[in-house]
Image (cartoon, rainbow, N blue to C red; front, side, top):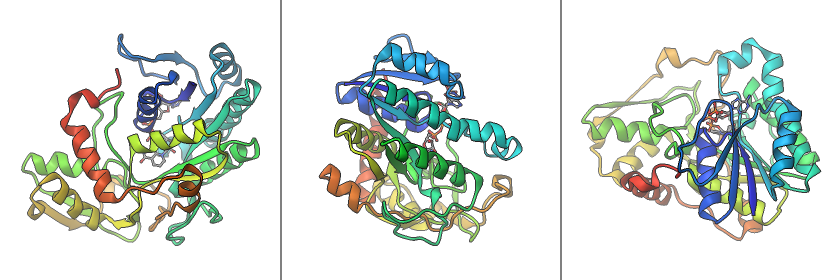
Length: 316
Ligand SMILES: NC(=O)c1ccc[n+]([C@@H]2O[C@H](COP(=O)([O-])OP(=O)(O)OC[C@H]3O[C@@H](n4cnc5c(N)ncnc54)[C@H](OP(=O)(O)O)[C@@H]3O)[C@@H](O)[C@H]2O)c1
């Protein structure tokens, strides 16, 4: 199968590229600033996702069977400062990529988020009506509507942990979501430093963690099955930040005595509400793809194996 992916130079996107290559598919990914290594087993094209003509030309030239749209404007403050740009980068880019996919009869998968929910909808399944409480969630929901109405699939990821396979040197730090949470604990504790697990009502405190590579594998499976509708690409277990921190220590053999608990760094303030409990469940995803969601422990064990095998830590 030929797979065209936006944002393969990003954290989640690089794992989708890896999953597609591992499944034996041919891959083209678009980039804004990312340059692939010379021996990469995939092609990178410089395409601005907000330019429909450029998107369509790249898709037409490759004739993919599957389009996975993952790229976003990942700059919270810029999104709020320039709403037109934000709309173009989310909803406009989803229109452009889904129209290009339709033109060549490629199946379409949009990568989305658990932040389409409001933080009180614990255990939301694929049919739960979203209720975003910030601009990012609203733009993602509008993008989901475009993808679904064009007959595509929406692949929501949540609490994404794992390795950045395109830019392994990317700094990994705790934020108000769950992304990079496990890696930042492992980095600190394995260096003998303490780590303060943030706990506060105004941050994302409970989520259903996932592993980026497994998210990519689920998306590729959705594409192979040409399945449409909403999918939840996450693990099986809802955990608090504290529970995930202790589980990380157990699985990685780290000293839990180095964990501290306290309020978030004020510099991480987003200036907009963040959903508190964004836990997801996966009944439709499991049924349609014939799988069962992976436990948090198993996800962390796989992550530990990835970290200990350097050849798995980059896409080449
Ligand atoms: N990370 C998480 O914890 C998390 C949680 C929930 C959902 N998600 C979803 O996962 C997806 C990827 O997020 P991420 O965290 O992996 O983000 P990321 O690492 O910041 O990657 C974003 C990518 O978008 C590309 N991009 C930005 N502007 C572009 C433009 N105008 N034209 C073309 N490409 C452009 C960038 O390309 P270059 O690299 O070439 O500059 C980058 O590779 C998003 O859809 C996000 O909503 C992520």
